[in-house]
Image 1 (tube, rainbow, N blue to C red):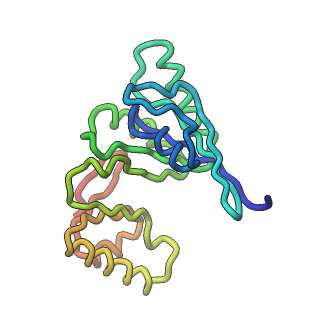
Image 2 (cartoon, rainbow, N blue to C red):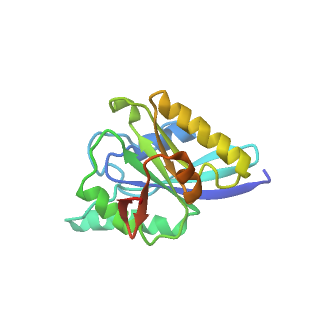
Length: 192
């Protein structure tokens, strides 16, 4: 096979659904799935082939504040993967309220230069309204298409879908007249 390849690390808190996601992506049971935390104790690699390349997914132990030596090693394995991959996929359990563990993980990620995407897992368990997350939706498009995308997002919002747009295009958000928040030094603040 000729093409491109890359590594993606599935990173997140214990029981966020990283192993389940890996199994679904590769199409068969590769990683143990359990409702008990810290079931994954080492890295598990899963390869997904595409016509023009392949992606190696790295399932990691859940990141948490370790209290025992074995847990320290498990968290070290997860954190080492952050430096060894092309993309980080932060898997978050959408059905669980964010807490100190999430802040601990985000604090670990704040200085990471590796491109990071957010995967909201277990969204079928959360009460509606529906949620649409658009990460840099206008990053590589011409201004006309960017405006059309924004109109689409506004219409979806009008119909009852919660739309969360993560972007560096501050002018676009200002044109929308929607509430905006900015991330400054790891803290979310309402934009003026």
